[in-house]
Length: 171
Image (cartoon, rainbow, N blue to C red; front, top):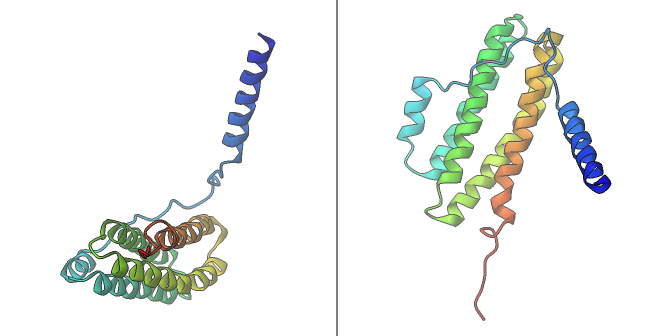
């Protein structure tokens, strides 16, 4: 009986510790932007036939979103910066989901996972610079966005080192 109660207490402490370790949104933080891809961007992405073409187009559209966000920053139009970063975030999610679903020719898809990961690297510094310029109420979302970019890069690298990424040669 004492052993069971010890396990129950340990379990409760571990749940309490895990719940306490979760990052709480500050009360004065601005709400995150909507993650929406514009109709024009959806049409462009739908028109891309090949995985390589769509991956490159996704990176170009992401770059355009970040450039526009950078242009709004000196004017202190933070709502517009957030809107563009929300679109950027949606494009990242869409590109990663598309690559994960595309397994028709594994070598081509793996090359595009690598291309996507390398492309995401370029945005990290730019997002950090935007993060520095944002007021404290708006920096919370940028921290989340940068963490999700890091996670997206990791997800893009997983297939390269998993079972898919190894080529077996028969003796």
